[in-house]
Image (cartoon, rainbow, N blue to C red; front, side, top):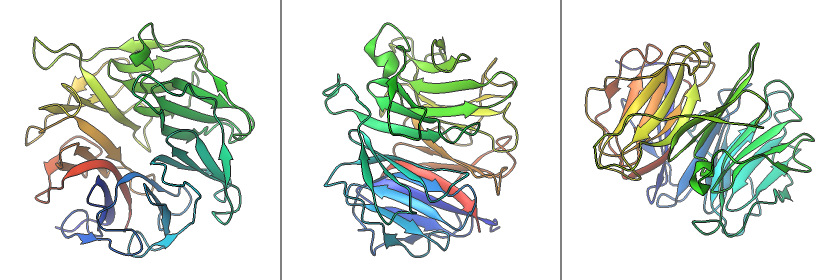
Length: 327
């Protein structure tokens, strides 16, 4: 049965595909987003679920009709990979594009752009660092957070004009190999970041971090690898982390917490993932619709806020990002 939400899936080598009916049918976008390009970032506007951003190696695109048609925003990325996107929820004309390396910002809805130099360590242990996450702080939209692969967490208090490199997340450089990030505002605000080691949490604005390590999948594994994460849009106590034995790995899992990250359990899935669970999508307009994807093309969806899941019949190549929006 068709559901009243749209799913977008961005891939490496297979461009962008859009399902207007919750995964029942799919349309592969061919113009102006090339059908065989790499799409690693998607973002739905917080204030308008009809508007979606897609970031690729060849440009940044926007849809005004829930992914049916797209226009090129003409960001001067000059071949840099786009790894993350963020829209200011209080000022949706302000857009951030995380690239490899650094970032770009527009303050006029994407008409003009300026390069942001975060000051990342370049090269890093895996070459040129990637800005895998950019978050506009829900408490103060002048505060911007950036997660770097591999260089930890950076923070701006002036809307992106200047940046500070926060303390290391751990003694190993790959503790700062940041893959996913989320902010959980509340009486005690927590900042979360995932890496190859697990999920790190800070309750002092990123000045110190404490790691939670997930169980290994096989005894010989060196660690339990983590990738994307989300916080449920209407219940900040509920969190999901994409987990796996490695990257890309041979298997994966969805780890769930229902108490703000204090305790975690593995979510039952109908089909064992074929690789790490790489990314999640959800939106405040449809908070019980959650989509998860394995790196090697499996798409899972939940219509009840993560209590139960089904695997879609449609499979892809390499999935790097997913998004959900109201149909």
